[in-house]
Image 1 (cartoon, rainbow, N blue to C red):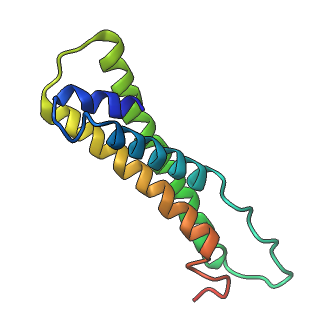
Image 2: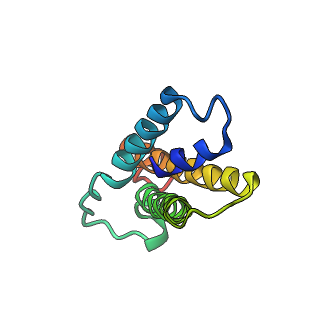
Amino acid sequence: MYVAAALMRLENELFGSGWFILLMMLYGAFSFYIGIDLPGRPVQGATSRLPEERNRGTDAAQIFSAAGTFVAAIAAFLSVSMIVVDQVVSEGSIIVIACCWAIGSSLQIAAGSIARNGVLDDSGA
């Protein structure tokens, strides 16, 4: 919501519309839910494997989730500070903040997809 409010400062017809703001909020909520609510790790069997062969998909999902959360949170923090302090920021900076938020949200969705679909299986392949 704060990134959408920062985009409204561009005074562009697209970014100022209510539908665009609603879509951004829904995308952010969906990505936060998918990227934070990762399924737990499967229980390891008695077979001994090398540590680098275990749960590559889960580890990648956790890294993507953490990176996405961090990048989206930084973008939200910068947007909030820009709104609260009423800073005059260039249009390029606002677009960079919005792109960082979109990348962070997309990383969270990728993390949830990896964790739920098991892109990398437990066979080490």
